[in-house]
Structure formats: C-alpha cells, structure tokens
Length: 403
Image (cartoon, rainbow, N blue to C red; front, side):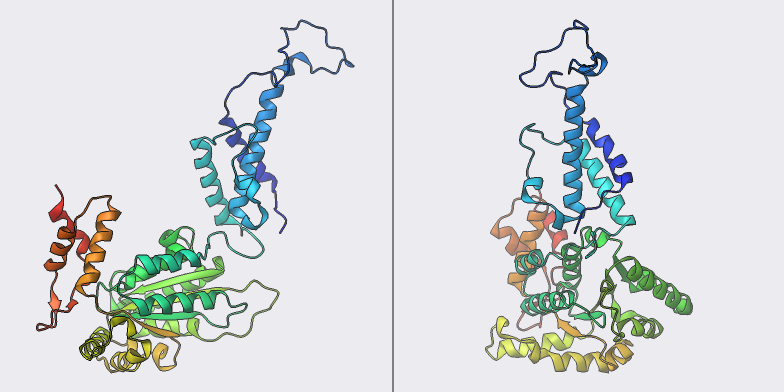
C-alpha cells in the first residue's frame, strides 16, 4: 500500500525537528565564510549571505524531519517500511531525542484514533500470535487445555477471510485458576494498548450491572456500547467477568450479536468480534473429573477436553443459581467453545509465587516459594491436592518475605 502523506501530518511532525544538535554551520569539507567578506552576485553560485549560516542547519532539520516521518510511517503503516528505515540513520549518527520520541508516540496515538491506519487493518490491532503462544506457554501455569484451545480457536477465527459470526468463548473453573489472566494476555497480544485499547471493553457484572430493576436501561446501554465499538473497530473484544451473574435479560440482549450474520460484501473490510465470558460456574464438575482421573493414574497433561466437556455443560445447564445455562447463548449453541480451567496444584502455586517475585524485581528462594505454597488452603481434605484459591492471593503473600 502506498503511504499517504496528508498535509496536516507534515505540519504536526515539524516540531520534531526542533530537537536538533547544533553543529558547525559549514558543511564537511567547506570553509566557513567570513562575515560579509565577499560580494555575492546573482551569478556567483553562492548563497545570499543571510542564508549562508542557515544552510547547514536547514539541511540537517530537513533530514531529521524525514527521519521522523519514516519512523511514523513504520509505526502506522508497517507494511510500507523497510529494515533500512527502521535502522538508525547512518551519516548523521543521531540518537533520536527523548522528547522527539514522546512526541512521536503522542502523534501516532492521536492519528490512530481518528483515521484507519491502512487499507487492510487497524493500527490499534497487533494480533501478535507468536507473543500470545509464548505468554500462554511461559506465564500460564497448569492449564494445558486452555492454552491450546484459546490459541487455536482465536487464531483460527482471526485468520478467517470472511467470518460470518462473532467468536464466543466461555471460560469456566474455580477462582484463581487463570481465567482473567488469559483474558488479559489476549488483550495484550491482540491490541497495541492491551486492556486500555478503545477496541477492548471489560464488563464486571456486579459493578456495571448492579441493580436488576434497571435491566432495561442496562440492555440499551450494552447494545449501544457493543454497536459503537464494532463500528469504530474492525476487531473488537468484549470481556464479561462473573458472567454467571448476568441478568437473563442481558444475556438475551447479547444473543443477536452472537448469531450468524448474512455474508458481507467481499469488497468491504471484514469485521471481527470476540466475546469472552468468564465464570466460576462448572468449576466443581471440572475438579471432580480431574480428581477422578488423577486417582485412576492419569497424568494431568493426559486429560483432554473430551473428558470434561459433557460434565461441564451438564452442570452449567443444571445450575439453579444462574441463568447462564438456560440462556439462548447456551441453548442455541451460540457459544463456540467452553474452555475448562483445571484446579491448580501446589507446584503451580509455587510457579505463581516465583512470577510474583520476578514481576516486582524481588529476589526469591525456593524456601520462600515453598512457604507461600504451604500458606494456601488445599482440597479435598484427604488428598490436599488442589489449591482452593488458585493463584489469586499469591502476590499478597510475598509481603511476608520482604526485608
């Protein structure tokens, strides 16, 4: 795609050239001119004296301006830039000033808010599948099923040339097993600004929809929010935490957004939407199946989705404390995948404790990790196998080991 250079961008980039180093006004190999020493005739080939001293600074300012333009273009239209443009400039040996870089960041953010960055995508979207795979492999502990299901399903959906429905994933498991963490990893790797992106919307049921008597107002606001985000973003992500507590009316209102849609005009850019529903519902069924398989001699990594799917969905549908299983989202199979999060063991809690130390730049010992793991409550009472809190309160426990 040919890079576009609207006049307003050239004007906005001009302040970047103000961060210049002052050098010798004479260019390399040129002798400095004396003060008005020689007469300058029209045919002399020399610059008019008032501009003589400005020639080199102007040349440097122009080159620096072009350098900033190249960097801006590489950020906004990455497919148009080359490795040479991303590399530091050679002849002038610049290190771009911090102020200039900050200004460039602000300008890029501003531009992306008001104009699409290319004919083929949205500059707010990064879709870093390599980073997502790495994060799910390294930072998510004890969830081999969620790791593979989320990566495969999300990548497959986003690579569809013309998707005909939104992707809906429902995360289920005990508190602290990683449901919110995976949602955050998705946002961080799919969007440049992560959870702060204006294409990512997070709803916490009891915070955003606290009063059942206002459900009609909530339905209208939710529908407007979904519609506005989809119109603004070619790729939108909606996260519903505590989804099992959503009012049946809100679940009903979400139904049309998850249905299959008529094929789009192939000439139009495809739009994609992902819905994530995070719920503790079904956690007991998952734990019972996992415990039975471990007691039967299976290793944790041998447990497959097929071992859990029927029991998980049966508990979701049978629940009398939640309308989620009785909603059209479940009954009409608008949920594309129910993702089970397995209960965490002591070894996983130790890994979470290690990550908590590292995230704060603190040293740790194996003894400290063992002590933190022992502080957690484990079930069932006889086996003491699964942490009832998962990794949720681990970061608070490291305060006991600070000097």
